[in-house]
Structure formats: structure tokens, C-alpha cells
Image (cartoon, rainbow, N blue to C red; front, side, top):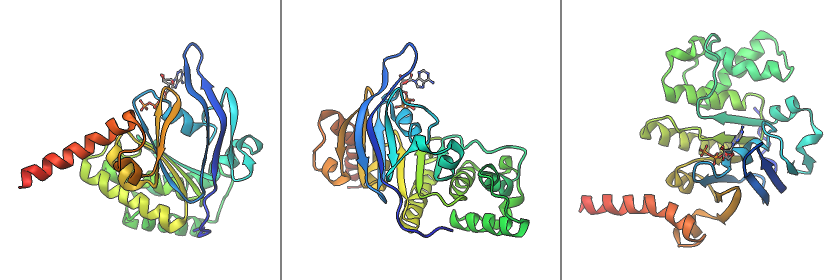
Amino acid sequence: MSLDLSGPAVAFHRIAKHYAGGSAAVDEVTLTIAGGSFVALVGSSGSGKSTLLKMINRLVEPTAGHVTLGDHDVRDQASHRLRRAIGYVFQNVGLFPHLTVAENIALPLRIAGQRPPREQREARVGEMLDLVDLPRALGSRLPDALSGGQRQRVGVARALVTGPQLLLLDEPFGALDPITRSALGDAVQALHRRLGLTTIMVTHDMAEALLLADRILVMDHGRIIADETPAALLAGDGGDQAQALVAVPRDQALRLAGLAR
Ligand SMILES: Nc1ncnc2c1ncn2[C@@H]1O[C@H](COP(=O)(O)OP(=O)(O)OP(=O)(O)O)[C@@H](O)[C@H]1O
């Protein structure tokens, strides 16, 4: 496991994406995310969050502008090398149903051209299962024989197996029940800190963003309309749209507190 505690800075330089026939999905975004930070991207459906995220690992190519990781333009690397340096977790995980959990976790090593001997590969898979708090015995099961939360943990293990220092999460907990969701959010935050990652997470859930991230970007119509710390958002900063999103968990907390009285 890489323990180099320095995830890369990620910078967007006037980045834009126009899909054919649509308006700008991302509209000239310029900003820098500091290495080692945990950033949440929130905003309404269709505001451009996933598109912005996928321009980092080049699953989407920008129409204009570019992205840098540290000092390097992401276009300067072959995409397989780039993706080895970037962990990516999305809502439905995309585990291969006919491969065991262990084989799924080891797959990025093969794709990255690494062919460690069997014992080394098994040791690495075991380490990754430990990292995401899954029993090693689950390695021999097929993904169908796991719960949704366990599958999502396998997705995180697979994303981190090549030792990336940048982790991208696209609605990673969207399909999970609230208790599993909260436990996994905490697990990802702990991994972020322990491994010194730079983490960028797309979420619809402002409460999750406030609890996990140290910086929150609110998107609307392809632009960043608020860029605040959780403390600043909770203190009322960021403008009306950001405050409308913060009002949802705040009102729920107040109503619950009222019920408990
Ligand atoms: N492959 C595509 N082809 C054409 N248009 C697309 C494509 N992917 C996304 N779009 C459009 O780009 C805009 C931004 O989409 P994007 O998925 O980035 O938004 P989002 O904020 O992540 O939404 P959601 O929260 O619903 O996932 C939307 O209008 C969407 O319809």
C-alpha cells in the first residue's frame, strides 16, 4: 500500500463540455483543488457534476480547456496510465458478475499491465479487503452473493488496488440504505485521511457533503455557483441556491429535535 501522504492537486483550466445538440454541460470552469483535500460536488440533476468529474480521468474529453494533476496535463499520459493513478467509484460499481470478489479487486492490476505472482496478488487482495473492512473469506464469493453495501466496499477496494492518490466518487452510495450509506461515507473519509488522498465526490445529498468534505462546490447549469467550506455554508454563505440545499438537512434536524422534546 502506498503511504505517500500527498494526493495531487487537481486544476480545471477554462474547461468546457458541449455534447452534440445540447447546451454546455460544463461551462468554462476554472478552479484548483488542493492536494489532500476532500471536495464534494453538489447541485441539481443535470447541472454537470458527473461530466466535470469524468473530464479528470478522461472518460469524457473536454470541448475546450484542460485539466492538470499536479504539474501534468492529463492529456500527456496514456489513458491506461492515467486511470491507474486515479481511483474511480460509481453508483452501480460495475463488478464483473462471473469473476469472484478477489478477481474483481485484482483486475485493475492486470489492466495496468502489472502481473504480480499469484501469492503477491493474493496478499494484495487480502490487504485491500482489510482496508475496506470486509472479511477475507468474501474474496472467493461472486458479487451476487454480497449485499449492496459490501459490493460498494469491493468497488472502493478495486479503485484503490493500484495505489492511486486521487479518488473520484460519483454518487457512490446512492443506492444504499441510510445506515449502510452513513457507515460507508465514514469509511471513505477514514481512508481519505489515512492514505492522504485527494478525494472528489459527486453527491445529491448536502448532509453527506457537509459531513464528509472539507470544501463544497455547488454546480448549476455547468458553472460553479458556490465554493465554500461546510462551516461557511452552515453560517449562511454561498448564495440563495446553496442555502436552499443546506436548508433541507437543517430543517430536518430542527424538526427531529422538536420531536425529541
Ligand atoms: N453522453 C451524453 N450525451 C449528451 N448529453 C449528455 C451526455 N451526458 C450528459 N449529458 C447532458 O449534460 C448535462 C450534464 O449532465 P451530467 O450527467 O454531467 O449532470 P449531473 O449533474 O451529474 O446529473 P445527475 O445528478 O442527474 O447525475 C445534462 O443536461 C445531460 O443531459
